[in-house]
Image 1: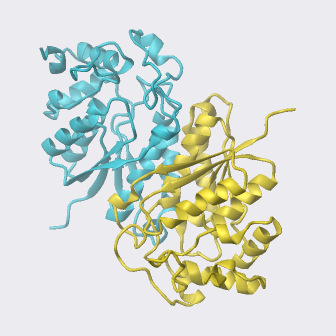
Image 2: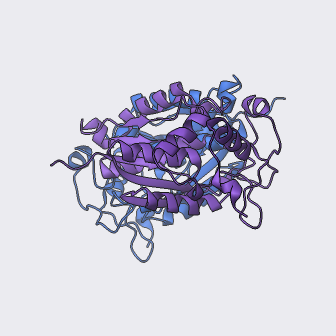
Image 3: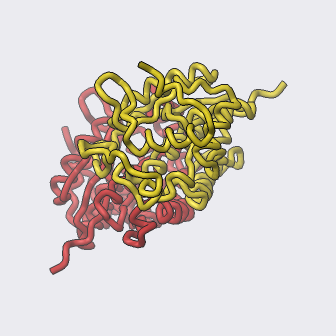
Length: 231
Length: 231
C-alpha cells in the first residue's frame, strides 16, 4: 500500500478553512494543518484551529508566528475599529478595512515552505470568491498565478519531483453552500471561530462582517448555528 | 517637488543585500529596509542589517519575525551541520543543505505585504543566479513569475494604483562584480555579515560556502576584505 497523499492545509479555525480541511480529509489526504499567528486581533481563532485539527485527524498541526502586525495597514492587525452592522451588499462592495495586505500570499508562501519540506504535492486554502468579491487574493486567476510561481520556486520542482497544486474547493461556493457542505461532512460547527471582534467573554460580536456573513450562510442553508445558542 | 519613489528592500545584512540597498539608494529610492528574522543560525546578521540600514540612510528598518525554523528542512534553520571547505565547483553543483525551502518566496511575500501598505511600487532583492546556480528561487524566470502573481495579489493592483516591480540588480553579476559595485558605491564592508556559521567570538568561520564565495569574490575583484583583517 502506498503512503497517503500529503497536503498542507491552511487552517485559521474559521468556518471556511475548517470545511476545506474536512474536504481534504474526505479526499484521502494526510493533512498537515498550518495556522498562521500573524498578530490578528481575533487570536481566539488559534484555539479553534487546534480543536478542529485534532477533531479532523490532521497528521500534524503547526501554529507558525509571522508578525504581520509590524506593517499595520489593516483593522485586523492594528487597533483600528472593525466595521459593524453592514449589509451583505455593503460587505460585497469594495475592499474592507479588515483586508490584510497580501495576507494570502504570505499564507501560501509559508504553506509552500512546509510543502517543500514534506514533499507534499498539495496545498489546500479555503478562499472564496463570492462573499468576499473585493479581496484580490481570493480570485481564481490569483491562485493560478501563485501556482505557476510555486512551480518555479522550489528545489523539488526544479528536480521534477514536485509540482505543487493549490486546491481551492470553496472558491465558487456561496456561504450557504459551504455551510451545507460542512454539515454533510459532519463538521462540528461549535469548534469553529469566525468573529473578527470577540468580546471579553469570548463570544462572537454578531455585528462584524464575518459574523454577518456567517449568519446569512446558516440562515440560507436552513441550519442553526450552534455558536448563536451558547448562553 | 514630488515625493521620492519608495522601495521595500530586503536586507539580510550580507554583502549581496547590502549592495542591493546601496543600488536602490543610488537610484533615488526612499528605502524601507526589511530584515526577516526567520530563525537562522547566523542571527548575528540581524545586527549587520541594522548597521547597514542606518549607514545607507534607509527611511525605516523593520526586523520581522517569521518562524521558518518550525519547518526545519535546512541546515540554516536546524541543528544540522553546515558544509565546510568545499570548492567553488562543488558549491555551484546542485542545491546545498543550506537551502531554506521556499525562503525567497516567503521573503518576497512579506516584502509585498509591506509594499502594499506603503503603496511602494518597487521591491529590491539581492538574488544572484551565478554563484548559487542551484537555488531555484534565484532565477530570473522565478522572479518574473512572482511579479506576475504580485500584480494579481493586491488591492492596490486591482484598483490600478500599483504595479509592483521586483528589482534584482545583482542577478547576473559574479561575486567579484558585486564586490566592485559595492566598492564603487562606497559600501563599508566591515558592516556586512556573510558567514553561515559564526564562531563563539562572532568571527566568520572562513570555511562555509558563504565565506568561501565571499573570499573568492574579493580575491577576483582584487580588493581586500576588511572582515578578514579583524584580529
